[in-house]
Image (tube, rainbow, N blue to C red; front, side):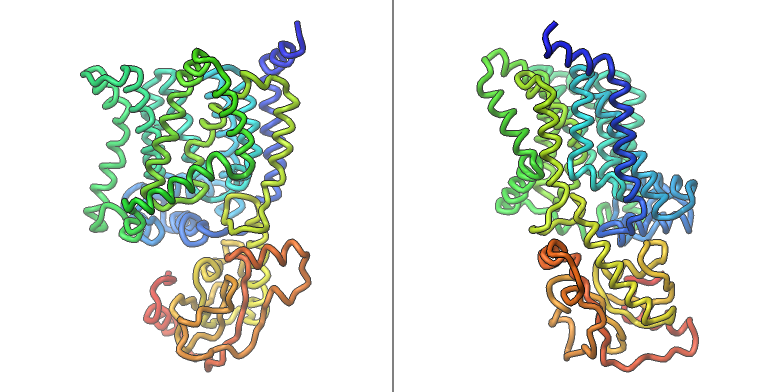
Length: 504
């Protein structure tokens, strides 16, 4: 037995042990991030919606939460998070713990799917490869639906391949009720069924496509009910992002392609896989394509979906594990030594942080943004001392002040507005500019209370805060007179009159 066969046998024989060690190491590495306050889209949408359901009751029906929280999306993710988070204490770190459990389940599912499609070795390597991807590592404790989408999507594909239709229907139904992006998996499966019929259309194909598309009825019924309750099928704000203009479609396609195959060191995998396919024999290429057609169709549907709509890097998690499995099925045909795989794993580590370009939540540098916002809010809290003051800000900084459970403020009595008014007493702003000049009729600044550039920071933090829009937070005291309210009711009515965005 040669060394290659011995290494392969280790993957096969010790698969359970290796997977268990991977899960333990990953969980330990992420425990420190459970106490990270909410960030970016967690603040105004998913985290806020979760706490709303914790307070008002969990619901899967349209109207179960205000439209500015649901954004018209199907509610399963928020419903699930509100129930489980409340079970563990109802805090943001309890929610992050639930998210970590979901991420560990996705690693296990990636292993099972890789084993089902190929063998235990590819399953284990795919799970390890997914665990060190900066995008997945960052998202694994965040209160965002994309890891859940990846889990339900991979479970749907797993039970589709196993021909266990009841389990497929359950997980595929939950997938489409988590977010509309789940339609990618249904479209990929339909194309795979068409491929199995050699791209011929017949009654047998139509029957199978209807069978595997049946869970889509769940989202169609939800949208019909949403129309009756809200007056629209899709959230009007989001429909404005849909574009069929050729320039928009092309730019989004190339962005999605770059993020999926090039970004965060994945160009190493992509180039190696491309070279192997090119150098393979005609029969070898046909074998690669046949075994990976389902993954190829899902990737194509992902590009089609993302090219027409607003796109963020985390959206690709719905097909990410499947892509890892597909790439490794190609690479292991030529690169058989484990040390090459481990070298790549080590090479991904620097990509977990990116200090020189604008990013949001697709790698761990978001922690710098969180820390900067914490310092800014702490400064405001120390000045205010739990009094009711009017604070002007915009996304995401003003959202951090809405609820003390978000991890930033200890003052529940801020009057928050996102439309500037001449009674605003404080301004908290993120970005490379102190405030938007177009928002004010005249110069309102009286004094600068918090200015990160003047603090003692490391060179990395200074560089990053100049590049990252959401981390350069600044706090100002205005020269407006302080408003006086005779009663809390009048204070709340004032806030609702000038800006209804942040009312309870």
